[in-house]
Image (tube, rainbow, N blue to C red; front, side):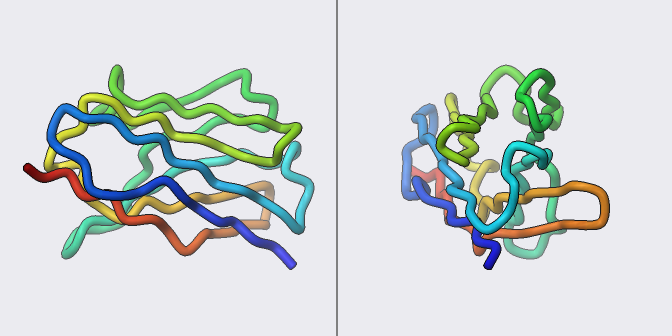
Length: 116
């Protein structure tokens, strides 16, 4: 049974930091590209960052470049998103995604709220 379980969300003040985690199970994690998406109320889901299966390459949305860092630990079947210098516009549900060929898996998401 495939599972992606996100954690680490919460309420943080502008300028603060959070680190999200996504624990994967039920598939061969080391062969999947992993991504973080986010969806704010009334907005479309958008790609935040992704990382290749080996971790050798990453890509970021322009809105988070220089502030967010995606990483993975293939020994722990976990992908992370370090978020620094958070802004109110980063408020959203953050979702973990695993993709490889025709396989595409999603987590349930974790809420991140940036507010003073």
